[in-house]
Image: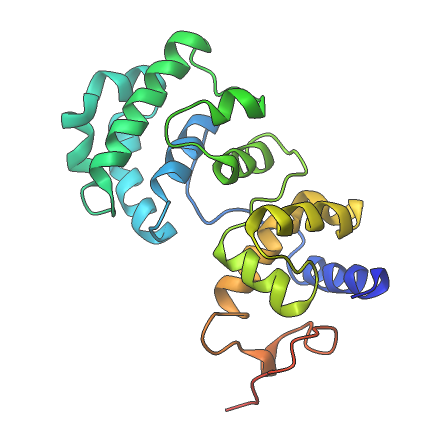
Length: 212
């Protein structure tokens, strides 16, 4: 795919959604961090249902740490892998409280040192909470990048590198949200809605699905 096509793709995505953001509900960087950790292998909807109750009771590092694992589990038991996530969230809350003055660190290395936080989670926090031009490659973005030809790669790291290289700078900050929403609602895994896709003529996917 050439640079002109990529620019037009993101121009259209921006025109359709000028101010994209995450579907996770949060008010502070710490709430976002907790929500993203909880969202691994879970839907945003299920996480939002859990965090609405949780954050009403405890939404700071000190409050989450005070809950402890046993106190946190009842709030998140509806989410997959909740025991492991409870352990990670309580521990990261303790670290943010004790080592970072209660503030979510803005450095990638410090974020990735937190329990339950990998590169993808760190990218989401850096982008959504702090406005950095990072791109967190999840299954949706991996699929869209490969299927369309925007940034094909064998693994998420390769796709991330290519997106950061090929996405025009003016679109880079919001590219993560545009691509994930496109993959979640249009360019879905089993039967993409190519017939209603606003970048259909630019996409290089050969198996486009016809209108029903």
